[in-house]
Image 1 (cartoon, one colour):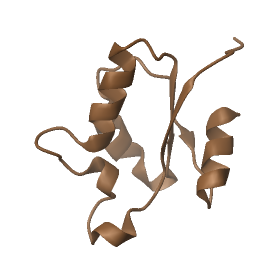
Image 2 (image 1 turned 180 degrees about the horizontal axis):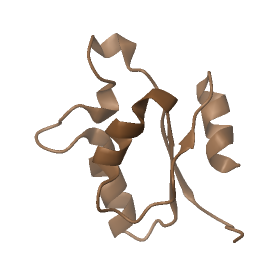
Image 3 (image 1 turned 90 degrees about the vertical axis):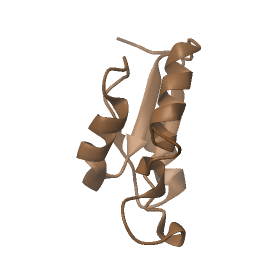
Image 4 (image 1 turned 135 degrees about the horizontal axis):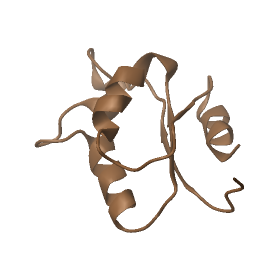
Amino acid sequence: MTVEHATVVVAAGRGRRSGDGIPKQYRPLAGPSALRRNLMLLSACGAAPVQAVIHPDDCELYDEAARGLELRPPVMGGDTRQASVLAGLA
């Protein structure tokens, strides 16, 4: 299937400046994580298909954040933000 458009959510960062623990996009933010909130909003407003780009180490965290949402399977990000964006566009 050829997709002419998609909303790319780049969430492959490590969030090191925000301290130890899980990456900041997966930390609870007054309830759901910031990533889950964004995925829910984008899915609900018809910005489909939503293509998430994640770090290879975060598959379980992503699965929890995306649970119950109709999204494209995530793709793995690269070593830089630019490489991750390219992976999402590809």
